[in-house]
Image (tube, rainbow, N blue to C red; front, side, top):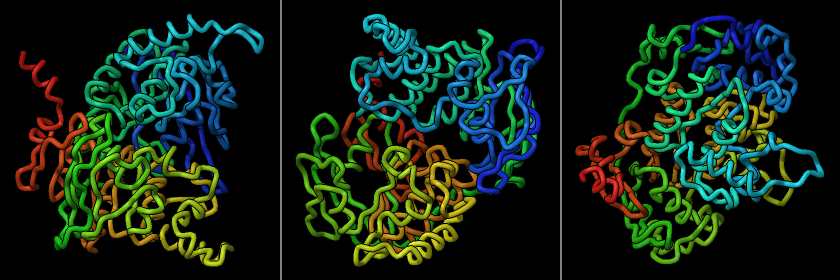
Length: 506
């Protein structure tokens, strides 16, 4: 970190309320030039709200900001960009029908409305940015269809291609492979050494310890502390985040394993996955591990009818199931919580209430007319049962924290009373405290006799929750590991493509 001088940005008394509910209270914080500064806290603690105020997404209810000692009014994201402040959102935001190159230059391309677009120069610059990130993406292809990881890398490239003095990264590593994380960390350290300031928001404490210079912890809308990272260990950070020492929270559920509920045999979608066969029993949690791009999400989408396989069979309760679209899967008692909640899970302009009840139209509108009182009861019961933190059940769901959005999506599917749940990265971007709640919920669902297929990139999560772990690499199942024999090393060995193993051994 550079020598301490005048701060790049000073926040004083920053407060924010939504619908009369205070979510941020009198936050004072200085951000130094040339530092990587972590913001930590549980979902709803206020860290992302504070970051969005710096980036112009939200206006503070009260408080002041100074940039290089001068008062500034960050009234919008465009105003923030002009001041050299860039926010990389947790959920990638892009124009899906524009090319990767066009998305990279959005917001800082030179020229006016009638200027000639320098396509060749734009494409060359986009390729340079992708090369800098160490990512092999065709910059002329549309954004639509890119994986979450690739979308996130384009977001990062867009921020780096502008001359930002303050870069805010909200959970940037959540969808990335270990190799991509290493590449990103190298870039972030180089930016710090150039004198830029990076705010790093993450729930992965090992990343914070490895990368950051200082850490600020939020709890219940208050700034609790700001310290050099070498003064805190993980136990200290967790205690400050949740206000108490964290006991062992990853535990095995107690459930009786019953008959086979879901069975897939020879499932194949050329170019995505091949000859995938497995079964999930009632009361069983089966993990599906592997690296990003291994085909795990594609298999889940095929089972749920989002993108059906071209060959192979699916059986539900021992009977052949013809699932060509999600409606077929829902009718058979399946539910799917997607990895990309922003694009595939949320109706962002609708209220929390409407999002929660979206999967039960026959219960709330049996004759085609929505019974608002019934809808409100279903939603309110779900909010209470899953302990969803919100100001009002009528507020837009986009105003909730990531963990509470994820709870709302899960609540939606639980209202449909599914027998089989496919959970794709259900705790991605969720803090430790809310993860503990999710683990309890998943365990309870298994104990009720539901069959659960759990896709996760977090090996401790798979080891803690699952009765068996299936591993995929390059579109194929490479291992099935019983709980008693499962270790992180075994899972990783099965997840690494054979070509990479051979290269490492050479």
